[in-house]
Length: 135
Length: 136
Image (cartoon, rainbow over all chains, first blue to last red; front, top):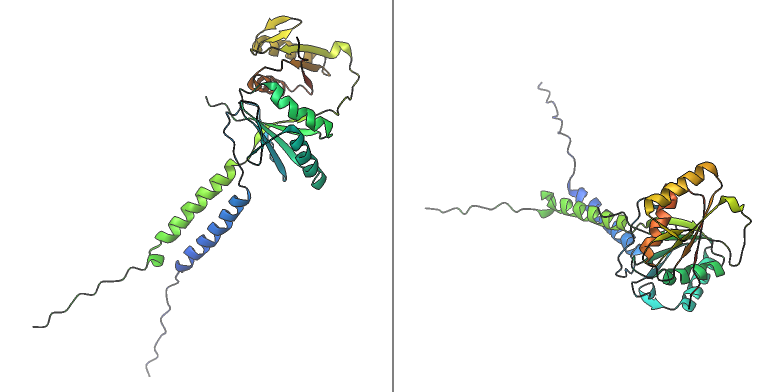
């Protein structure tokens, strides 16, 4: 009697499912990017060499353009309005990190106004955002 | 004579692997975009409004930052290099040194950042700054 040996199939890696995984990852990362989306204001960033990462879990960004106009969440605001925003954010999460993104050519008095507001609200830590020198 | 038509093999786009390549390229793009959002800079501890701290007068080094970015120590203009030298020397003598900076309201913000950068470089722990009162 002839005994037929069953042939073993060669192992295969199913690459069809790779695109499914890739697209799931893509959707996930796109969503994360959308959560991180921020309203940028056109400024020339000040430059500094000895910077550190100042990003925290919860962040609040205040932008100051060259003309001294203050922006929060993409809209121009007054210092009084900003005071309310900071107070509300701090009440919600006391560990909120305030970032000041000032134009390098703006007068210091414009940034100082925000610092004085923070002092008034007893907010202790502030991040002055800078970029690495270009050359 | 019978003419047989040649059947073309259908190309399955998902099987070709091009789709997954494209998706992974997009993933890399979004990861890079997400990384761009990280803020870097200097974290400063602010004092309470109208709060005061007792400091030994001999530990203080006072400087003034003018509207053109010139630094003055005891009304004498000094370069960034000289300022750094003065700070480092004072730090060696007095480790509890406090650097007090008075800034002109019209000074461009970059010059203030330059001083903060210098303070960070030389590891000055006690750094205090305030805006100069408006002069008529």
